[in-house]
Figure (tube, rainbow, N blue to C red):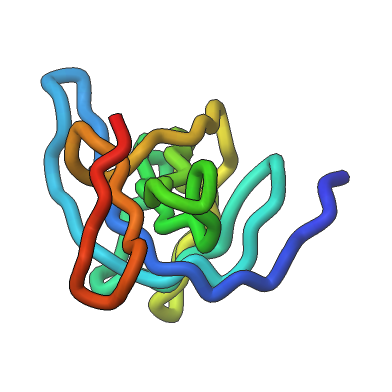
Length: 113
């Protein structure tokens, strides 16, 4: 059993099919564990579907670059505007442009590359 953490993080999703991605949308992750996530999505998500979640992580890489926690899994339960996802894989990815940017003073940005 994995410990669940109440998080309230924004995410976007893509439903995955054998022909690539299908529908996409947004929502909030209510709680998260190594084994799964409980989602509140803008539309209902079909049970049995594979899904890729891009969760806005609250911490930055080296305090500079925004991160997404990318979770691939299967929707195992859904109803009442919520869906439970069983995690198959997870990894962190940087979000945004090629370079890290760091605000050094208000209005001035230093590119770190």
